[in-house]
Image (cartoon, rainbow, N blue to C red):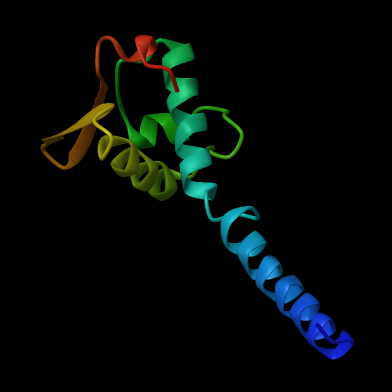
Length: 105
């Protein structure tokens, strides 16, 4: 292999690695990480039924006054079957499943 080919391959690897790092390490799992953090906080607090607005009123880092974000994260958590939404009047109530603390998260 020539020096030119090696240098080209090295630059290509660096380029692809930087994009892979940006996509997979530097934030692509931000919603997943925030959802996991929210779920842990809900479990630790003993909260079984709540609205996104009620959670946003708590003094929880990353979630304070973030009703839209919390709603988005709860929908994500719901896709894994760990919470359930229930429409009542003009609000959505969320419920943790009873044995949620037994789940290894």
